[in-house]
Image (cartoon, rainbow, N blue to C red):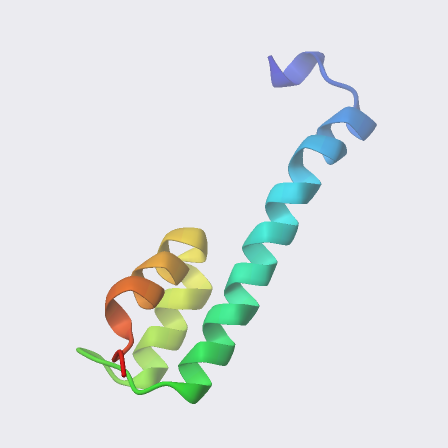
Length: 68
């Protein structure tokens, strides 16, 4: 299916996903700098956020932060 798309069409398809992932990563790193964390040190959460991409961000935001 993707091999039938031209390059501009493929870019239009992937660009919104890239922007969402980038925004979620930046937001997660911002929250990491401001919040207290659970289970792991901050440097470990940073690695999970960066290398885990979308799933790493979601895991940090759901279980990695201490709620006030």
